[in-house]
Length: 324
Ligand code: SF4
Image 1 (cartoon, helix red, strand yellow):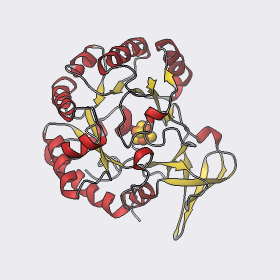
Image 2 (cartoon, protein in one colour):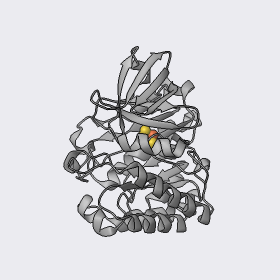
Image 3 (tube, protein in one colour):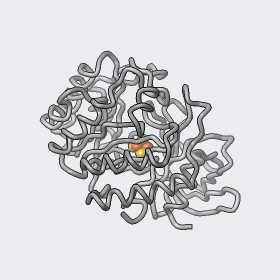
Image 4 (cartoon, protein in one colour):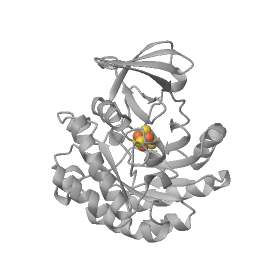
């Protein structure tokens, strides 16, 4: 099986149970993103790419840890060898930090509002990065909205100021207000990710009450002017109820304004626990369309330096997981 097809299958399952030698240095636990607040994740690689799997001792897929990160993955007709990658902060080779854990909004697919871990101080974040400095290539920041969109942006910019001394590219993913792109650029941020989340405005309004779809699209358009093509990204969740045509239309529209879409398989949790993860076939089909749209717009995810396109753990990424 080639890598994109295999990764689509692993992403559709999304989980693994661990057996064998203790795998503590290879486990990540998160307060944002898929898997937030769960029992943690591991990052498997067989040399062709990387995939993040949530640890679930009831999973049909087994990862047997032989020691020193060497593993065998077993699932029905599948058996392959590879490694578990060591995690820096949240994912391999990055300090990906959630500044504020908790949120005043209630996006239906999101676990962050339920996690009341509070807000990290700029000083504490600097110490966290210092501890992993020799194991990372970039810094990424995300945040819930603790009080207001504007206050969160201001706080994240203070954190960015504190982290400039590391001389690493910094990516930021927050909910944008008016002119957020300009202020983040002026603060020295290298890349931004503002998530459209849903393929249509109607679906967005249902999933993210109180938030504005237009704000996200306006910020994305502004960002391409500032950060440049290949350095502005947007998550589009697959599995919220959109049709393939709606997903493809959104992918094409994002590429047309110079934004690289990230197709994120839904992790059914919170208010969407009755939903299903998208199938491997659907993910693989959309991967082809995603790849074509990027090529037609001259965009290349391999140029990304930070956040999810650099990690690739949760998504099929054209160019990194297969030809663009
Ligand atoms: S792809 Fe993004 S959300 Fe997923 S593990 Fe990597 S950095 Fe985290």
